[in-house]
Structures are given as C-alpha cells and as structure tokens.
Length: 158
Image (cartoon, rainbow, N blue to C red; front, top):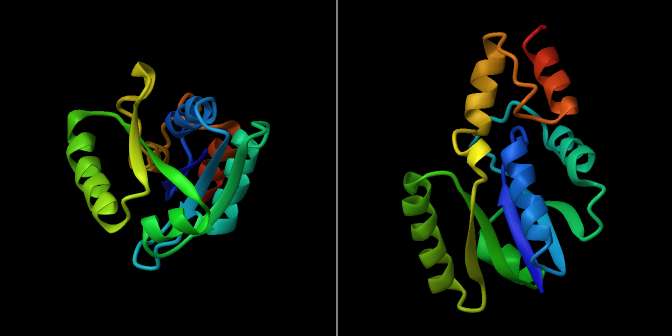
C-alpha cells in the first residue's frame, strides 16, 4: 500500500524524520510530499526543502520525495495513496488533524488517515519553533539534520 506524508517541511525537523522512519516500516511505499502553498511565505525554497529531505531520508529505500499543490485528497488519489499519515505532538494537534481527516474522508472515502504519536523527545518540536530559536542564534543542532542547521545559520547570518 502507498501512504502519503504531506507537509511544508520548512524546514524538516528530527520529529518529521522520526515519523517518516516509522511510517516507512508500515507501508510498501511512503510518499513524502512538500505542499506548495502560494499564500504562505516559506523561509526555504521548494528546491532547498527537497534537498533537505533527500539528505535526511534519501537512504530509506521505500520513500519517494515529491511536491504538490491543491487538495490533499486529490493528490492522494492521483498517486494511488490509500492512507495519509499525520504526526501528532499534543492533544491540540489531534483536534485540528481530526477535522482535516474527517473532511478528507467526506471528500474521498477511499483515503484514510492514520496518526502517529510523536516520540517523546519531539513532542515540543515544530519547524516554527526551530526557526525562531535559530533566528536568535540558539543552537538547533539537536532538532534538525546537520545540513538544515547549516542552512539556518546561513539564512540568519551566522
């Protein structure tokens, strides 16, 4: 079965990688896809985020890295994904993700959503928090792959 793990991954964190590694063991193919959202200002370009993903998970044989725009369920059907994977850090994540899962299922009955709880080490971690800490010169090396840390340092003039 093909599963889809979508996100903006701006930037990818070790929490994302943890979910990807775990999900890749559950499905024949895991498509990790970057959402192209014209209304959202990203710190990193699509190309940079694709490179970060390749560097972090390129060694996992059953993961494909792609990008998409538009409705998630339409994209899931296009790539024949029967499952959307979402990571949960806290109860507040669940409330939002449950709404999205129900809407996706209302739009497309053949696409289910599964939730993977974040590993305890990553429950506080988000791309937004990483960017904020990095912007103030904080050390984010424990939270992101080394290539992302270098790119963050460069973006913020370090």
